Amino acid sequence: MRATSLTEAVAALHERPGAVLLAGGTEVVPAGGADHLVSLRRVPGLRGVLSADGDEVVLGALTTYADLALGVGGVEVLTAMAPTVGSPASRNAGTLGGALGTGSGAGDAVTALLALDALVEVARRHGTVRVPVQAWLDRSGRLPGDVVRAVAVPRLPGHYLKAGERQAVFYATASVALVVDGARQQLRCALGSVADLPVRATVAEALPLRWRDGRPVATPQVCLAFGAAAAAGLAPAAGLRVTGAHRRHVVGVLAARALARAGA
Amino acid sequence: MSGPTYALVVDGEQREVRGADQSASLSHVLRERLGVAAVKNGCDQGRCGSCAVLLDGLLVTSCTVLAADVEGSVVVTAAGLAPDGPGSVAQALVDAGAVQCGYCTPGMVVAIHDLLTRNPSPTDAQARLALSGNLCRCTGYGRILAAVRALAT
Image 1 (cartoon, chains in turn cyan, brown):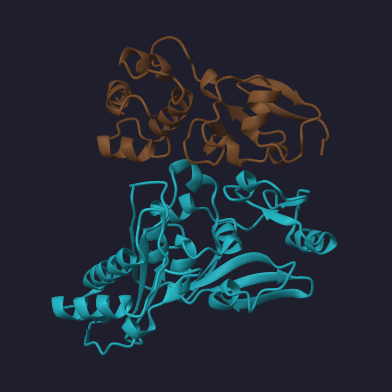
Image 2 (cartoon, rainbow over the protein chains, first blue to last red):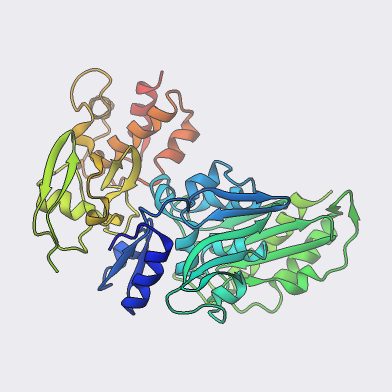
């Protein structure tokens, strides 16, 4: 069924429990198995910047990784994240809404959105609500029949570092999304591929730091401490050819490097 | 579940798809229903690039596209991209010795065409990035990149 509006898509999901939303198809089509698909391809007005009000950017659910890689939205951590995902072909198809729908712990987009404290704009029968991305991902804020309309994110500086076995088309061994809120002198650091969902490195975020001109003072010792704090307490599962200990090690390296790049 | 008839424009020709499963991918429909051999199925996961086509001008892996969802779209495969003659990507690959088993070749043709359309003079690094979604098990990519250099302006 090809929806021509969000309202139609929401109604279709309610009419057929078990129906699955289809956007770029990079996850849904290979997986097969869904009895009923509700395509969003023809719903207008869901791609790119829907609004940019002060420091908040609202990006439509059908915004692709290719769009983000070109700098659409101007949100640094998303611009840095997008080129690390998949291949040129899959970046043409994969979407932010799709990433949220999949909600994987290895998902680069959701890791970056978690660092941004993104708000997910969700279309429901009675209207649109904003759900914090953490609550969307852990499903506490998610209801059956929900359709992601957009994500609202702050336009803050940020970095995305991803390590893996290849240069393209790879799931991260580990990834780090770092967002710098100079006005509040706060760092927001999310880790990917360390758990069933991306996690915030709250211990690392709480490290006392000096700030200068809206950026953290990132001496080598501070960076190492930040990396160690990000990795501490993690017990990532092993992958096919990677141990949990290695993942934890990579987190420490990437977090330290991210802070160095963010630093004054 | 068998679906309704719909049309696709494939390599410049209007084609009708009848009785295809509604859940069929575009690669399956192109290859199995419409007999388009210039689409290979290496992984069915969107990871190898052998099924790459241009869909309304955009490079995609056809195995991750639901065929019924793109009714009416313009699909271009390697067969539709000037297979012979000067400026032909396929010919450049042959001339460079970049074709061994040939399985990756159609997808490579489409991806290289897409690259050169957007960037007629790519650096090696840009070419590698552009082809990062196309796996080749035979050539080690050296000859393929040589073909891209030969085609670059």
